[in-house]
Every structure is written in structure tokens, then in C-alpha cells.
Amino acid sequence: MVQEFVFPQPKESLTEGKVTWESPSNIALVKYWGKYGEQLPKNPSVSFTLNNCKTTTTLEYRPITRTENFSFEVLLEEEKAPSFEPKIKKFFERIETYVPFLKDYHFTIKTSNSFPHSSGIASSASGMSALACCLMSLEQQFNPEVSSAYFKKKASFLARLGSGSAARSIEGGLVVWGEHQKIENSSNLFGTAYPYRVHPIFKTYQDTILLVDKGEKTVSSTVGHGLMHDHPYAEARFQQAFNNLVKIQTILEFGDLDAFINLVESEALALHAVMLTSNPYYILMKPNSIHIINKIWKYRNESGSKLCFTLDAGANVHLLYPEAEKTEILDFIKNQLVAHCQNAQYICDNVGTGAKQLA
Image 1: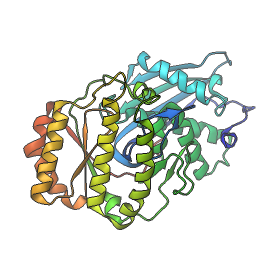
Image 2: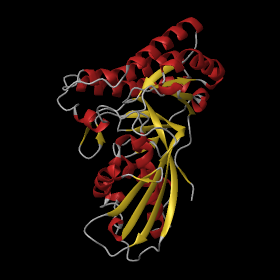
Image 3: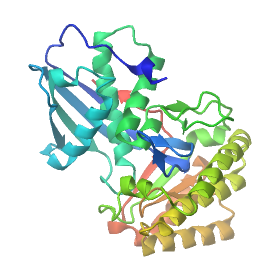
Image 4: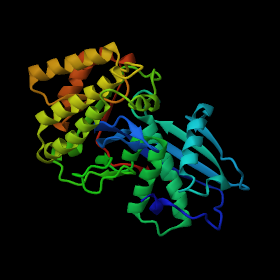
């Protein structure tokens, strides 16, 4: 299967140039946590692609004499970011078989986020997917016959090798990553657009992200995934996710928001439960995360709202709700929840359309 992504060494060289892509983050509804092999998921997941939380990456390239080492530099928000270099080097090592011209160029990778880096908004997902799209634009220059479908498929495949959840940031709307016998064309190798009917209410769903803690996480996602090996509850958690992928199909088709709330919040808490029961154990939620969750439950109980929460691997709380409730929910946030946010900050987002080429 991976053979379809192997690209032969080009015989000619590109002249100096640059390409720019923006790619969004995504928020998983059914979470993946735990991997095997080379960035393959132990369970399938499905996510909303976001719209406003995104990374913009410009890849500048110039031909050089081929060397044994990769030649690149990384700039974050126009400042040199040497701390990113080990991750990019590892990414290049993993993808060289599929992008064999990497050592023929010096790359300047200029990247910027519309949200705080390493704060639990999956910056690695948007960052790696944007870089993968840039590299695919170079491949397309060598091979103009590359179809749009293959471009997205291989970009997702490459992005996954940098960050697992990045596989879900190329396509828009709902995206599945991870093989599941009940989901057509699903794969562990790349993300695919959710293939079944989706109720219109989910096509404009809102995600307001409450920035509880914008600092670096105490335990990285890479370390957290590794702790799922020999985890006492790992197999039960993987089976829970497989089962929830089946359940969510009916929810998405018929717009059953009560069932959606139950499944999404259960998934979020299950993710953090396996963190609490890892060895060594750790907690990524903060006291303010818990305060927000309790206020959401109280608000929903009193108002009949269809507001729910989810969490990624961090302290920030994602508020998911129908577009029709936007005015009321934003008032609720301003009146009751901003007090629990760092510097009263939050980001208003919604379901988006995926990665886009800017230049």
C-alpha cells in the first residue's frame, strides 16, 4: 500500500522558489491515543476540521549539491526556532523514501500560528499538514499529472509521519483516520473525508476554545502515546473508540444532539482517564478546566442547551454547539467562563474546509 506514495528521484532540479500553504487544526470527536509502528493508530478516530485555528507555512527552497544531511532552517513568527529542528529532521528522515529530493535543496521553513503553540490546540497537526502540502506542491512541479485526490491522500500520508493527528487536517468537514471495517475506505495510513450522510446541523458546528493554559504541556503527546504500551486499560479504551465510531454514524446522519453530547463528552473524559491511569501517571487538565466543565453541565441542565465540551491532550476546553445557539453561548462564555481562562482569552472557531494553497 505504501508503494503508491514512493516517488522516483527526479532527474532535473527546480530553480529557486517558494510555496505557501495554510492548514487548520482539528478537534477529534472520537479520540486516538496510542500508536504502533511508524505513526500508526491503535484505534480509529473522527474529527471536525477547524477553520480559524491554523498554521501558515512558507517553504523557500534553493538547489544545492546533494549531501548526506538535510539542509534546512525553521523560523516561527519570523524568529529562528532551533528547538523545532530535531522534529523536522525526524520528519524528513521518515519521509525521504517518499520525497527523495529532500537532500537536493536547502529549505527555509517559515511558519506562524493563529493560536498559541503547544497549548493543546494540536499545533503539530496544522504545522505538519501545512509542511506536507508544501512538499507535495514541489512534487507536483516534477509531476504535473498528480491529481487533486492523490495530492490530498499523499499529503495526509506524509503529514501523519510528522504528527499522527495531522493526517486529519488536509480534508475539510469530518475526517476519519484509522482503519475500521464499518467505514468505507478508512485507512491507518492517511485520513479520509467522512463518507456517509451528515445532518446539516453539523456542517456549521461551532467550536469556541477556552484558553485555560497557554503554556507548554507538562507531558508531550508523544510521551503520552508511548505510555499506552502495557497500559492496564489500553485494550478496553481501543475497543471503546471502535464502538463509538459505529455509534457516531447514526448520530451524524440524524442529528441526534443528545447522543452527540453523551458520546463526545465521554470520549474526552476517557482520553484523560487513560492519562490519569498511565504509569507514570499525569494530569493535563487544570482546576479551571474542571470549573468550566461543571458550569457547562449546570448551564445545559438549566437552559436545555445542546452545548457540550471536548478536550484534546491539554487543559483547554473546546465548546461544541450548533450555530443557532451562538449568541446565547457567547454571552454565557463572557458572563461565566472567561474568568477561568488565562487572560480571559478564547478563540471562536467553526467547522472548516481543510488545507488551502496561498501562493
